[in-house]
Amino acid sequence: MSSRVTFFEVEILDYKTKKQLCFLDKVEPHASINDIRLMFHKFYPQWYPARQSMRLDPKGKALRNEEILQRLPVGTTATLYFKDLGPQIGWTMVFLIEYAGSLFIYLLFYLRMPFVYGLEKKLMSRRLPVVNLACICHSSHYIKRLIETIFVHRFSHGTMPLKSIFKNCFFYWGFAAWLAYYINHPLYTPPSYGQKQINFSLITFLLCEAGNFSIHVELNNLRGNGPKTRRIPYPTKNPFTWLFFFVSCPNYTYEVGAWISFTIMTQCVPVGLFTLVGFIQMTIWARDKHCTYVREFKDYPSLRMPIIPFLL
Image: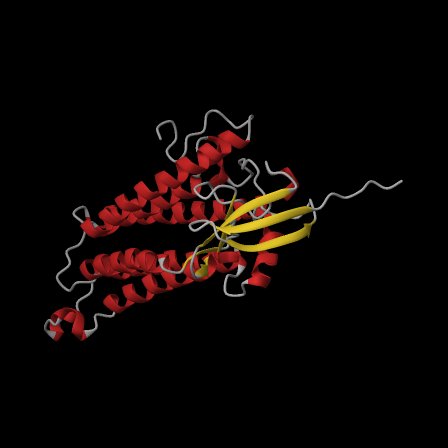
């Protein structure tokens, strides 16, 4: 004799007004929040799933797509609260716009368009070798990021609010213009310690870029079963991954190292400020990820710190 399936009824209310938006009848118990979003989308085509936030409490946290209805703390009649997140844009497109813009803006200053500096032609033609090297390093960094965005990265969160891209682009494009203006200025002066300083910083820059790429590839390999799969990352035969012995987010460690190297190479204050702001933001992200690892995995290596070995 087959067991009888108990269907759920799902009432969806506006999180502000508490007005009923729709009532879903005979929802299967193993339906996910994503399934409910798709059902809700049929009633309101203007609210596609990516811009929907479903929660059990009007002021509570948004439910994840993969959460199952019968596992939620609700009865057979569930009440969910809907919030419109506004127009969304995919993370892949966000990164492509941010990185391509930074690359293009820097090259504009490197080419010394007449409207940028407005100096004599004699001065405009003067360009130090370190300026050429800095352009190669900056361009290769963002070309690497574009390649990773297209072929390597997998995003657990598919979209972000469209309005946020203006803030992100202002940060990346603004800093790209600021540091490019000074590095490519005809009156730019080379680093204090000359070629030794440039060579040292170039080597560390290349090592950090290689390390950053290696970590991104390894993190991508860990998500072979899908972008939401989470496992503990461990060092592999690749020496660049050995930083996993000491930190949870070595990709951020290498990223900061690359920008510190670029700061030393160019000896430019705007680059140093960009590095400092980036380090603060990446430290926040690294701490959040570290705490998530510790919370989800009881056997998580205790020696690891978020971003700086033994310190932070």
